Length: 167
Ligand code: NI
Image 1 (tube, rainbow, N blue to C red):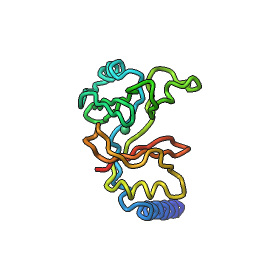
Image 2: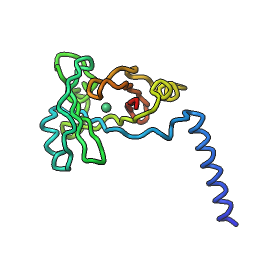
Image 3: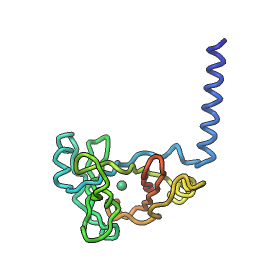
Image 4: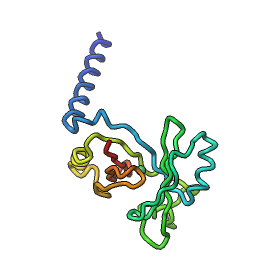
């Protein structure tokens, strides 16, 4: 009897979770991880160890002067990683935190965002931004390194940065 009750409780919880997801965003189940973003000091140096982990270059290094970064996408056929380096050290960039004296982390690279591909970026931003759970860090804009597809960055105080990429 206890087992049956536990099962009923589990099913009830699952249904509530499922209903929650539907209400929040009807497309939430279609969110897929597209890449993990690594802030690095030097892309070429960072590629060498990733190459030992069987990652290959997916593209050449692409410059994004608007964000003041350069980017290289690498993949091991299962997981895609984006290596991000500052383009011009004299200008602001989204990965300046890596160079702050107060930032202490071993090594010259750190994963700092996970990018999810979504069907409708406006709807996804709107839903995640509700109740200020996810604050818009960088509104929707075109990403030169991703064939001008729309991306946006959101910050959630307990988990950090996520990127949304429109399919
Ligand atoms: Ni990214």
